[in-house]
Figure 1 (cartoon, rainbow, N blue to C red):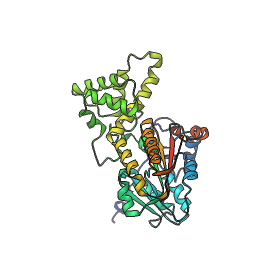
Figure 2: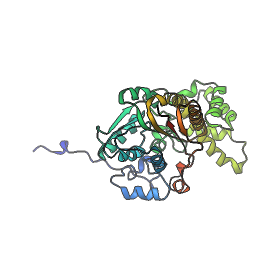
Figure 3: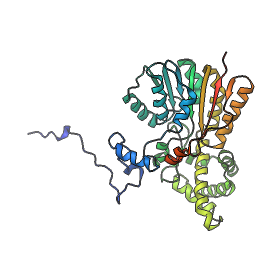
Figure 4: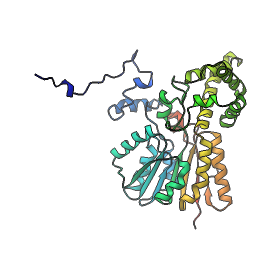
Length: 354
């Protein structure tokens, strides 16, 4: 008698971990399955954390209040991410109109599109495209000019928390930092092709790193010895070494802040984030319908300066009829629930009527 075991699916055991609570990303199987373990996910959020594999959208209500989305309008989410803002904007359309959503991260984009389709947002109201928002002009050529646009800059929590992506110094993983892993070179390769002065300049320009000279010197010395700097842990060790002269009482906090800034600077460089943002801001007005509204969330001073300048000059030239005079920040209540919201700044503009 033949066995039927060959046709039966193989049971995959969940990852085992030491202790009573999972510590590593791949061990957090409940957080990685929010549909099945919603209670666990809610518990993490209530404690001010972000569940593994998720991203909590920031300033959703403030964005909706400004965009004033009406059924029948055409909109663009330039940075799809986890899709929280996307779903909120889609609900405002109430089944009428259309929203186009862009992203370059093929891994997360597929997951987000599936979630949104499961929520009932079909191709009739939502189009998802794998394209960099620097190419917004190409998108507008296909989909028409937009009545409202949102760009939420930076990296999503599910990218930061996944060690395989190499975005965070907190977890050991390959030093990659690419938003689109199918293009360009990872940060580990980028470091091999810059000089000490270039790396120091990168750290100053992209993240205002006060220990840029010390860090650049130590990292380049390591590479000159033929030792690879190809993991997040290795880069963190070198940053710690560079800050050895910082007083012991202050060193731990100084290392933590420098690690965050160095990883940010490398990420900006690897993904050409400033160049991408400048291209987007330049093309933006020609892709908006008269009276169209644009909201942009930034997360560090370099991004905010570019947005502020573009909007200010646009208003002076008569391109925009209104722009935000001051940044809008998330409420203290939101920051308490989601600490990652603390550095967020929102700016907005309204395209002039023809």
